[in-house]
Amino acid sequence: MKKQKNNSLGLFLKSQILLVSFLLIIFSSCSTKGSEDIQKRIPVGKCTPLPQGEGWIDLFSLENQTKWENVTSQNKKEGFEFLSGNVFHIFGSKSGGYIAYIGEEVTDFELHIEFKLTPKANSGVFFRSDLKDPVQKGFEIQVLECYGDPPHKQNCGALYDVATPMFNMCFPPGEWNSFDITCKGSHLVVYMNGWKVIDVDISLMTMPIGKFDTPLAQLPQKGYFLLQDHGGEVWYRNAFYRKLTDK
Image (cartoon, rainbow, N blue to C red; front, side):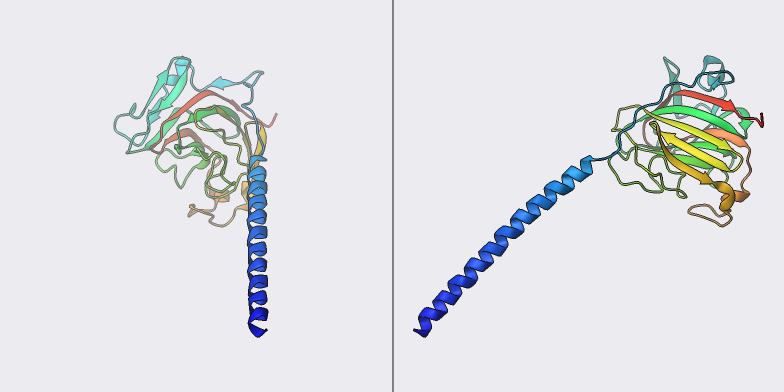
């Protein structure tokens, strides 16, 4: 009799274990499916149209193409070229470097620029930058192929290593993206593919943040536009800027 009870208890426990295992499998499957569905629910923007109105300067016009120089190489034309259609092409050299528009320094401005990336390519749009030390004496909006990744202070659209974009709006490799950047005084606003991703007051940054040894509030409000060669192949096009005045 005791043996029969033990057998019954054993069968009962095995059935409960099987039931729990089955429920765990079902729950795990539903959870995974739900997670996959949620991952698909990411904001999708679109490349914004070219700016209209007076005062816009084409950084890649035939006239201005001669004003771009590699400021980190003895060969001023190393690492980049202009293609037909005024497309700026960075080869992605191992040595890397910074390619500057030396036409003039800019203080307050609006900038529209579009870019296309190879997988995991890394670059950056620099402004108010010092030609000799853009890393510590320039502002960078990160350009990085990071499609589908969570927003991060080093991902595409970030004020690099300082401010995380509100959304990761990066398109897959090979698709054109757009930045619309406005910098007036200490106020910086960045739109990526039509969505606002950065809106910060630089004057509040009175302490060193991220990579910067100097508080961003103390950096000069005047400098150059640069594009970064960080070892990945990148294309830029439709780079138009307009200087802002008090008026």
